[in-house]
Amino acid sequence: MSKEPIIINAPASKSLSHRTLIAAALANRVSEISSVLDSDDITRTRDCLTACGATIAEKAGNLVVSGMESGPKGGNADRKHKKDAPHELFMHESGTTCRLMTAVAAAGHGTFLVHGAPRMHERPMAELVKALKKLGASFEFKEKDGHLPFVMTCKGYTGKKVEISLEESSQYLSGLLLGAPLASHETTITVTGKKAVSWPYVALTLRIMEDFKAGFDVQIKDGKQWESVPWRSVKAVTPGTIRFIVKPTGYDSTDYQVEGDWSNASYFLAAGAIGRRPVLIKGLAADSLQGDRAIMDILSQMGASIKVSFDGILVEPGSLHGITVDMGRCPDLVPTVATVAAFASTPTTITNVAHLRLKETDRLKACALEISRTQTQTEIVDDSLIIRPSRVPNGHCINFDTYGDHRMAMAMSLFQLGGIDVILDNPGCVNKSFPGFWDEWKKIIG
Image (cartoon, rainbow, N blue to C red):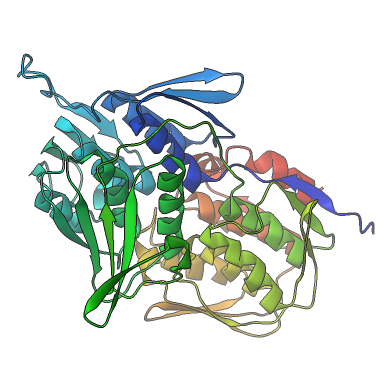
């Protein structure tokens, strides 16, 4: 069999596409953004930004974003039109859009109807709502307190200090950070709680804010003193010891190119580790701040060969073995790594991932159940998932449930490389983050 690598072009980063479009829409003039991911989730963010007053037009494959005047505007923002209906922010199933855009809209003026698909109404928002109330917003819940749907009324960030826990999601903090430069005063955001998950996503937010000239200062508490530190030096967060001082600078317009997505590339990198041919991924930044860049280290620890060059990231098959790995910083990789673990020779334990229960589905339970269909033993223990591999049943046809979760669909497809005829109940759910996935996947399975 040929050992020539299969070449895959990485799609644009979903996380950075969200954040870049938001920053451009909050800027004072026009920005041209290239390589934006075209997916259902990004469409949700685009629509919300338009509802808030931005203009987004397509030009030769790029997006030209004309920023809002005086920040996001909802219904009744203009005193002359007191009877305007709330402006609609429809999130569908995009948790990122929901958390980021709710906080950003709260930095504006007027009323907003925030709602989504049924699953989105089940996902918690109470922690963010509590913070936004402290900053001056008020809420009318239509069904259940602390959950969508609700009508939010806001007059900008009037509060000057707020606390936020990252136990459920780092996106709460990212949303507050993105909204705070629109305030008329400095805003202090302090991280509280018992633990903080997914810090690398906050780093992506700070990078975009820096690139669009939004002002902020990161401070670490050393004993009784707060000391300013370069934000890139922060690798993890201990609640109670870090805060952000965001200055009322607004944003400057910037032409920007979105880098490749390590999350969506992870399935192809994993394919290189468990398949029979190497896979070369182009378009990824090896020094990226994306937390899911950790897939390189994880696959390497499991026995795959990883080579980084100017051509891209090359993954070659190896004799895989199990590992114990804390994935609190990169939860979106869990379905990928758990599936790869089924091909290893020894058990794998994935720890610190209780917050996976709050994703598009209970992703922790879904991973355990769907992978077990391949005769692999799985077990959930507290915040951990244990995978005890056995021989993957080559030649069998197995029906997998996706739960409408894009990451489950893409991860379960990896079992095709073990000779399983994979049948998915909803292959189209990949459109949420990677509409071109199946076209690229054909290159893998031949």
